[in-house]
Image 1 (cartoon, helix red, strand yellow):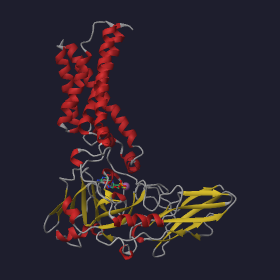
Image 2: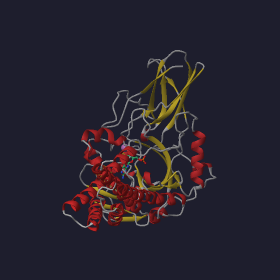
Image 3: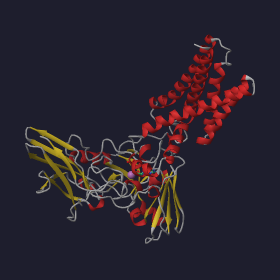
Image 4: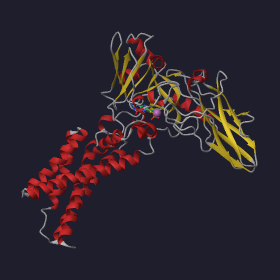
Length: 510
Ligand SMILES: Nc1nc2c(c(=O)[nH]1)N[C@H]1C(S)=C(S)[C@@H](COP(=O)(O)O)O[C@H]1N2
Ligand SMILES: [Mo]
């Protein structure tokens, strides 16, 4: 290799290795959290997206495009820190500095950048130290001895690899040791016998439909604005009731968990869910009614609205009347609420679009005038009741027999029937429906008592199934009927801005 080319290759390799080391070193300190530089960059990228992309795409961000965003941001992070190492190198050469000064300058620039991005001082120091170590170990730029160039590059690549290994070892050790970090460590919970009973009931009542979830979702969708979810310390978490109250109320997790709880089946649907999409799921949640807290704070029952805030700086404004029926959940299907679903405590607002079911909830402010929430500022209208939908996720054909099925959901309006047309909408037949899931069940109910699991869930989906004979290609259409007889509206609408609507249809080829 030509000496000039070799020197350039070396510089690039050392700078890149240094960038990798900073990125890995900061991960070692803060893990996959909002304070990791990569996540901070991802969050900045999200904010910089044009409104149109944000408005139409982002409520669908959920789990699908998230890995892509994180990978791209990791690339940006490495490039940024590599660039700073190169700048340090350049300043060193122009000013004819000592090698130690260049090494220090590289680390200082990188550490400063880490701090500006993530406001995490320990990560800044460790990141800068890792970056500087790589530059230092590469040794001074050799005057043209290709072998020495190679040795320097190998050394710095080695350090970068070690940093990545070290950064990877932490989460791995945590995963092996039970999956939690120090401050998050809490006793695992035994599943309550009552929850077991509710889950069994849901299993018994589910139709066995390939391609569709059972009545309690096996995989519950995740949607939020975060590249990495906040990690809330349950020991220091609290929820405050502020604003137009007689008296501010603050409860910590012990206070929430020691109140009389209930178990409820609640279905969530994202306003960004496509007409026949899969951002619709159900779980049994354990928690306490919001109404008691409102009473304790002396909230006027005829107030207009509330702003609910969360640990990820999310905020949603919606009517006080909707919050009154709300629920503060700290368990999901009998387990501690997972981090991705809002640990330690989230709000569940019956019959309303997912977006006001605030995760990682920290504050309820009672407002006297309307305000605008996070998604409303971005063009969505998702603070109201859900629209009615009948999903068609299961289609199976076998020798002239066709079986179709899915779920129907109408929020608190309830589903009384699902109708299917196999002739393009001329005639309609009634599908089989799963029995309604049980209603709110007090946590102190006797699991052996059949009446303990009583009533019907006010806010849960129902499964449907329809079997018929057909030979030629045809169009299947489904629609839900609400409890009061209202037929689901047929007008088709995209998810943006007010939620998808219309009758789901699919072509079936027996
Ligand atoms: N704090 C917070 N809560 C949030 C969000 C968020 O970005 N931050 N996203 C909302 C949206 S848009 C939806 S659809 C639901 C999804 O809840 P899930 O991820 O548990 O399914 O959470 C809501 N709660
Ligand atoms: Mo959503």
